[in-house]
Image (cartoon, rainbow, N blue to C red; front, top):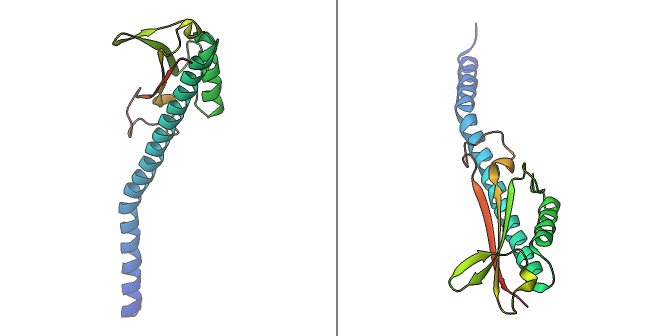
Length: 154
């Protein structure tokens, strides 16, 4: 026959198991959410840096939009952005525009713009292709993460 203290320890062990079974799904959800939101913030920062690089490259010299696009996609690939290469499966879009009055207009040759013209680079990535988790529970489906930078043509 078990003593009174032994039965109490067995009951407590069972209670701890039940508590663990209740808490672990909540804890794992929090941890995975933190990882996913951290990845989202990282991708947003990389896109902002890529937009800054694209605007700097477009504003400095004799590069056309295709060259700036290629340069930016190389930067994104090196930074770990998935599906950054050009083509139909690309998760990334890059737009180079200049300010004309109060509107932004796409350009194919920023090197032809007059000195002092504002040039805007916008880099967008589909976060669904950047996520480390197989679910869209935390961020949603096809969320775009965008970085924008404006520099004046030198």
